[in-house]
Length: 302
Ligand code: CP
Figure 1 (cartoon, rainbow, N blue to C red):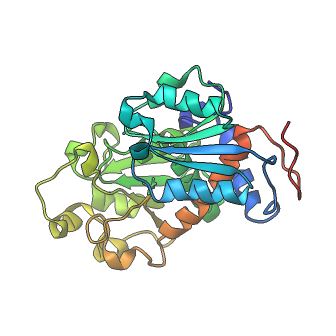
Figure 2 (figure 1 turned 135 degrees about the vertical axis):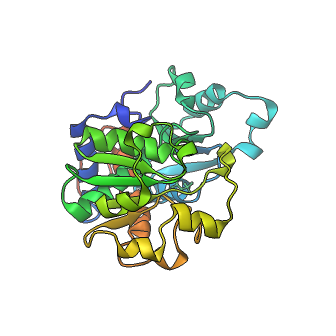
């Protein structure tokens, strides 16, 4: 596997994380014109639906001057039985310099150890979502200026959430505290379970998750009752700390895990997270090619 791949937050140490976050922030001001070498080809292989991750990778790639391929599994030879490994090996053979992959299988990348070009994980099953985690960290750092000693409450369908898993790994590594809340049947690790009403008053960050029905999550409750029992209602919002913020990886099911009126309220950073997604993905692509910042025109590709 290429050492500049990004598969899981476990691939990164604290120094790597801060370097990516610094680069992401630099893309928002000092290095807006920074470009990849000419004719850098990147393929986006999404085997699962996505709006934010897919199209913020596309936005980042186009802004950095890459040439991109938007693969569709439905229209590809995957339908003829081609394996993931052979699909990625094909993109490598036909001249692509990196691949971005979202796939429903946990740790799909274990099949790709012989691939030499960088692989950027855009989400694997219930496993990992490293670029979502990095954009979440960037959003928290912009708010609190540091990532130590934060109290982060993640609420909802924890066991099916690659976002919860990646965020817990990274935040604990960085010196923050994560607690999980929501329906107990979706929180296997009860050691860090916290009652929602207690957690709302404890947290600096309240991160809400949607119910991942596509991964088998189900609950015998209508939306209104779910919101009252496990969601962020206006009453709970009123009890959040003054400085606390609301996050959600989205897509949001308005009126289920969060009251519709709170999605764009003062404490919400949900659309800021999406904005930060493009910056983080630019930084992760820059890292994939081990390139330094150089202002202005792109390098020639060797
Ligand atoms: N947060 C996230 O991964 O959204 P998409 O599924 O739309 O990419």
